[in-house]
Length: 97
Image 1: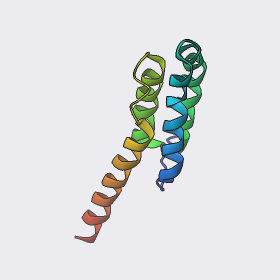
Image 2: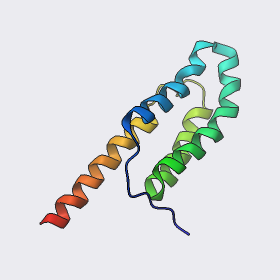
Image 3: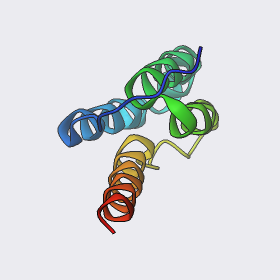
Image 4: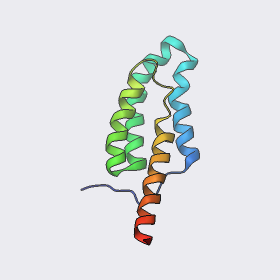
């Protein structure tokens, strides 16, 4: 069964999730080990928050981004929030036309 969210998650939650992902920079060596635990958790949260196509692609990208060293700075949740808002805006504009 396809899970398709009809809402966009709150921006502040997305920013918070991105900040949690960057927290591994606080402890250089241990942080990368912590990313091994955080990557799958973050991917699951991402999919649950966004669902649908964005959730599927984004959770995979988020998992890889959190797993590889030095890529935690990418704000995956916030960028996906912006993408979701743009696509929702286009759908609303298309329905209004």
